[in-house]
Image (cartoon, rainbow over all chains, first blue to last red; front, side):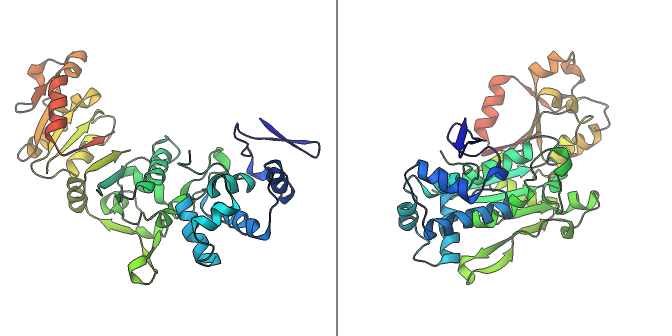
Length: 110
Length: 133
Length: 102
């Protein structure tokens, strides 16, 4: 599959995850979100940036449980809970946010 | 009921897929909140060497992911001292794996314990399930 | 709480059997299968090590794998018990856990 943005084509898997991490740009991220009907707020970006940093360091997209705990530690308890994260990313924080962040689907995520 | 799971790793990374497969099963299995231990013996100790660089072999370097194990509450990592010694390695050649101890004000503690074959044999005998890689 | 250890590689190809013997406790069992049955033969370099281990570990070897390789059962070290596939299943059920030395 491929994602068409501004006349350019980006390779993705069958669920829309970018095939090449290095293709990712903030514009592409916004475009993927718009395609799902989501406008990214600063709160969304906090999580997306966190995921990209986590991947950069550990070469893995964290499981939801790990993401929730780590967000709580970094951004505060009011954000480190699944209610907050699901409100931002109703299709599932790990799944949807990882997609926008240009990361592969989290290991063990179905 | 919480069961004791041991992942026993004996292969070097990259030459075969065992090491990566084991790591993926550990990460997926971590969702089940069991009592997990990892053991590295024989060439398995090479999975934990620091400064792995796979740029020129066209494979993903998955060694940084071992450092995430603490986040997944996997913090009992046993390394066979005899296997290190016969390969001319010491614990200083391994990734400095740590976890944050929830019961001790989140103090950062080392996850790796270098043990002898007797301790590992006893560890094997106390498991409910062993995943052999 | 006995452990069944299985070894499926020849001791002349891999260290699986030697490694297995380093990590077994008294009362454990070792089952040699596939190329691992080579480790059950008399007069090999490993035979003295097996003899020593047999003092407190029970050894088994899978008959079908021995015969498939043209190794007569008379060439197996005395005291190593030969089992068939049903015996393999029984051993698995009788022990508390299985560790496979690959």
